[in-house]
Length: 447
Image (cartoon, rainbow, N blue to C red; front, side, top):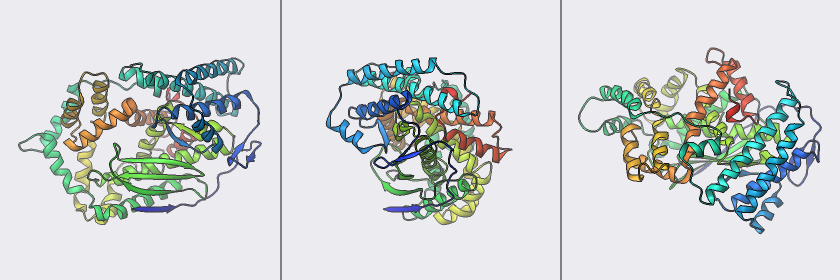
């Protein structure tokens, strides 16, 4: 099933820089020939080259098509990729040594962020090369090397305290995960109503986003429903302000996932994030490095963290439960009188979010095997057996990537709130959120 979502709004104002359009790539270019532009071009080509060795590495690319064609025609070995990455890191160090201290909020700050971004992205690329060559990293070593962050560690007792509260909420016999699952089954979106519910959620997320942000008039995305994936939803950015969003229907889709996916993958999440990067950094500034998105890199923590925090930005406080009670529950044929009850339980479940990290950490560190990891998720994350097994497949494919969702969300929230973007100041919150997803800021810069 495929549904095309057309979206239109006002055009963003130009950044005021000298711009010309490259007719072949469709990328607006700033001043040509600078050292950083040359480094950026080589960085893009290295990311594409590594993608020849790692099918999951290049998440999106919309730069000059001949670069991708050339990379596919001539496969570069991993040692050469590593050597070229190190040479570029040294080139960046020389460029950085000649830079003055940036003025906060000025163009020189953006240039400093660009330099730091390329340096850290190349460092992550080098780490991924080492992993592909067989180097073993612990979960925390890997997340620091790839995502510029390390998630906190929690003991089992942390999760058990939350589970004890849920145990009282779901009185009865049998494992808690089964009692919780029985409760949730009343909130599954029927398969024949999934698209209409999801479309209504997208509409609401988009309306709320456009109430605070201006997007290019021709931005849009396509929605597909797929199966046999290790994830529940995915945004494949196409360039030209377009995305393909896929929703996995292998397992039951609960009512809360409609807003989660519509916000996270669409508005104001991944789709908006990529659209703003393309508009502000690629077209307005000519920064070619943002035409490629290496999945295993610090950029992913920003992307996933802001996409998850964007749900709260779009639906603060009790707004979400009220919207779903009035709009989505009836559309799905669910009992709207139970919406408040459902979200009271979900608030407790959300406190278990780091349980997935602990399972992944122990699994990646070979402290437990796949069967034990799934059992741990059943017990401490309250995932039914089929969902726990799917999550372990995600660990196999994406490893420490799991930190980007919960740690990234917490880091994005702290950063935005530290700049005045609190729930009590929604306009400021939206402004800081937009500023963050329009810039090349790194996870280590979210302070």
